Image (cartoon, rainbow, N blue to C red; front, side):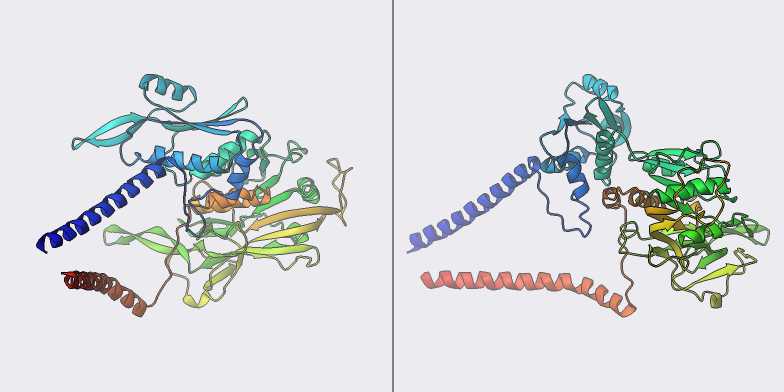
Length: 529
């Protein structure tokens, strides 16, 4: 009997060992397969780890061979050591949805000198990264770039530093290669607008992959609008003359799209001086259904600024909320321009009045509004940091700050004499379907104030106006931080105690279940012996 018991015990032990070995072997094999086979289950709300339909269609509809070469030095140190594999995974995902024209290659770095020369010939440089070897900090030179080859054209991502926005970068390069003529976006100049060359360089970097960008001066060339898809009017400080208004008006009548960024306030926080620019063009704007009010909006939801206060013989630096730097987070979540935004910052903004719209022909879509604790200054302006604005003056809510106007607009000149200084032979009194976007601020795109969300809002606006809406869904991924919902103190305490006690309870419960299973198993074995 003892020998039989030993034999059965041995068989049970061997059976367990075989099962464990099989499980480990299956896990190892699956991991080896996963390294070389693309597959992904994306449970995020915005599908940030899956390529968008726009990207899929780009590579699905290729009509000529597109080759992507990935140059990555082997054994890149932490934290860049996973980049090559992440890039391969992303390219595999593109390939899974592409037609046979899409190809990619991970270039071997075996012959290091030739590898570096080949990369450099495509415009991919060696870069220095810090690494720790044998407990010492050393500097290594590595290559981490992509080159895109299509027909006789080449595009390059010289350095891939992260994969956070890699899909957007890849799709932008492919889009630029396969579309020989990118849409042209014009920035009006000549009326003391934000300078295209000096104050809008950040926006240019954001947009240059997908658009041709150019300054437009209608005083010098009345035909400068002819090939534009979208015209930007970035904060004119002076009134635009009637001749140029006519050209812009007819641009709208032709079904083209305009973005009005209107700065009304000349403000200097350092001196607390503020006054209105002499740029009132609301008689013109009202024709298209809107009015940028001659006012100044302030809001309890605001950014902080640095304040220097004298204390005794010295100074004390502190940070205070400045209600004229508005953190706008009240967005129209039904519109794709702003649906994924958390906040943008507007600087000395004015409200947008849409009450002049002809309801039968023009659709109004509010994009951004103030919070429910805001206010408005008119006439004499006071932008001083101290004393603070009394709480009683925060008595307005949902003040419109940015709006879209869609439809068939009527010419501002339909009951007026046409300018005689320019060619008016092709005058249109009523227009085709067009789009106008109005923001009661222009400084939010200025280099001094441009941040990630401001750039995203403006780039999305350009995409939407140029009807390149597929880019919006890609660009918004991995940029927007998901804020935690505000909860009560009681809920916080409940969550805290659950977090403290639940692990102990679970461990105890699992131990009890394991003990019961073991006890039942031994009791079952005891019945046989």
